[in-house]
Structure formats: structure tokens, C-alpha cells
Amino acid sequence: MSQNLTIALSKGRIFEETLPLLAAAGIEPAENPESSRKLIIATNHEHIRLVIVRATDVPTYVQYGAADFGIAGKDVLIEHGGEGLYQPLDLQIAACKMMVAVRQGFDYAAASRAGNRLRVATKYPNIAAAHFAKKGVHVDIIKLYGSMELAPLVGLSDAIVDLVSTGGTLKANGLQAVEHIEDISSRLVVNKAALKTKHALLEPIIQAFASAI
Ligand code: ATP
Ligand code: MG
Image (tube, rainbow, N blue to C red; front, top):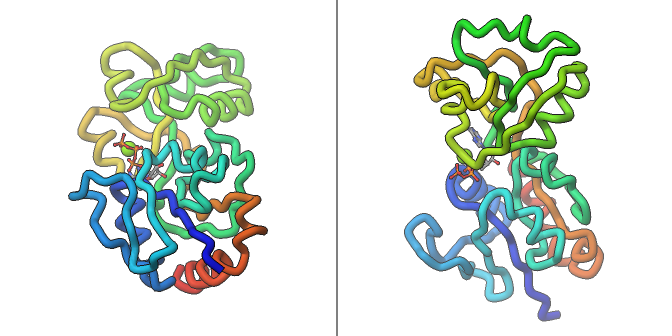
């Protein structure tokens, strides 16, 4: 059997927190993607390689079978929709919360009453739209790609929907979290076809991850 396995990972915290899980499955990257410029990283197994992609692109690579499995935040998976993906494990890494935040002193309770209209800046338009629809609040969603904290400070939006872990970045920018939307952590995502055709290769890795959590 000479099947190959491709694993999609993003740099940064997910990669760091995935290393011990890979080690538990006997997989060791040949290079550190933080210092290497290579996007394809070999491992100690000739038939297993890593591809380094943007966090938001992990579900796409796995959905289309360009990677057999990957690790992606629940935030990214909700936005993506999860089509073509089997999600067998919550790996409980890269834990944080999806929150609504506003300028300190902003009367969010009044501004977010049902029937009101709110301008919300976010990297997560689907999550934000669903949250405010449930509350009956009309929103104008402004899609951003980073530095969300700036939006309420310069009048681009009333609120932001973003990931919060310690709250340090919010505080440093005079913002405060006012509403919890979702607990976030990273999940294993497996291509549905690969799960069948490469079951013998995938199953021991999934088991090793499961017992390493
Ligand atoms: P960049 O921040 O460089 O624009 P990114 O946002 O795509 O890149 P990360 O910030 O590393 O990448 O986030 C990757 C994943 O890690 C997110 O999808 C989320 O699941 C998780 N994450 C993001 N921020 C935090 C945080 N503050 N604490 C814990 N996990 C987080
Ligand atoms: Mg980020």
C-alpha cells in the first residue's frame, strides 16, 4: 500500500498546539514552518506531508481533497459551512470565545434592542448575521480582514464581532466584550472521500489524536 497523506495546517498558534498531537501519532515535521519559507513540509514518514495554508483556507483544501485532513478553528468552520468535511474530534486547542465588543461606555443594551439597527464590523459575517438575526436586531455588516478593534474607535461601526481570549487587546483599545456568541476551539476536519479510501491510514492517527487530547 503506497497511499500518501497530506495534512493542512496553519502557522501560529494552531501549528504550535498541534505539534504534541502529531507527536502522539508518531508524526514529526522535518522543518519548522515558522522559520522555513516552504509551504510543503516533509515529515519523518515518507508518505505523510504537511501543507501550510492560511487558517481560513484549511477547510477549503480539505473539502476539495487537496489535503486529506487538517485542523481548523470552529470560527473558521462555521463561516465556511463545513461542506464535504467530516469533523470527528474537538481537539480542545486554540480555545477562545466569539464575542460582541463595543467602546467602553457605549450603551449596548439600548443599541441592541430588537428592532434597532446596528453597524457591526467583523471578519465573520455569517456568524455575526446569524447572532443578530436571532436577537431580532437589524445589522449592517462591514466585512474586515483584521484590526477589528479599530472600527468602533474611528466610527466605522458600533460594535465588532471577534475572537477574544484574555480581553487584553480589547482593553488596550478602550473596548469591552458585551455578549458571548460561541465557545471556540479547533477541530480535526477530514475529507469525506479520504475517510473511506484512506481509512487504514487515517484511523490510527485519529485514534492517537483522540487519546492525546
Ligand atoms: P492573522 O491573525 O495573522 O490574520 P489568522 O487570524 O488567520 O491570522 P490566527 O490568529 O493564528 O490566524 O488564528 C487562527 C485560529 O486560531 C482562529 O481561527 C481561531 O480558531 C484561533 N484563535 C484566534 N485568535 C485566538 C486567540 N486569541 N486565542 C486562542 N485562539 C485563537
Ligand atoms: Mg488572528
